[in-house]
Length: 277
Image 1 (cartoon, rainbow, N blue to C red):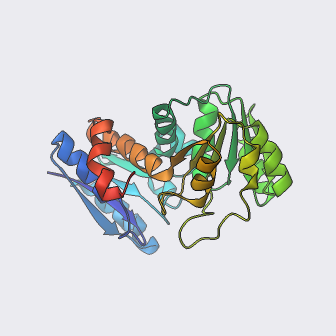
Image 2: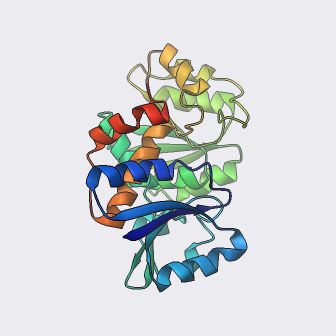
């Protein structure tokens, strides 16, 4: 029996055991998946322990996604590009870091029938999640990615990493209104609207969006955020963050086991446990 973990601090709230447990049950692979609280001071010891044997890999959550980089033997191109790791595979004593957020996001969009090539995207945020999504969208051929953040230097820094398609603007009502009017896809990669976090100061910018546009909120607690509810009232297509959570987990599971779960069956199995509509 091979061992998989999710590590973080705190980590007991993680939905990864539920997701990976469902995929293990579906595919019948001989793996177990457990939560492991790892404090920052113990991260290097945990990686060394994992490499020493018995562990096939582990998922990484806060606060380790960036801190773990120098402890790994190899990074995938996606992880290197966005500077963060959420999946580590152990292969012959070597720890290989991946980031499945970007590819999971593209998988989620494809499931909605949306393809980024040539499209205009308004990306709210410039942190780790925004970096993963931005790099994935650029690699998929997005025509224009408008990065919007509270501080222009942060937006500009991420936009500069997206050559040929990125531009940065500050999170101000007039700027976001103008950008929203031109976008095919709006992605919220900030904590705004998350339970326990501040709400958007206003959502009037949604009224400027074209009727064909898609609004994607990476926040998944609550399942239906104020942003998604307002977008739906506007008649816009919406996607919640739980979709990315599932899709990136599927990518990680395939890295771990070599098996690709039946996504439709997985959604059906998780509908009640995750409170999906």
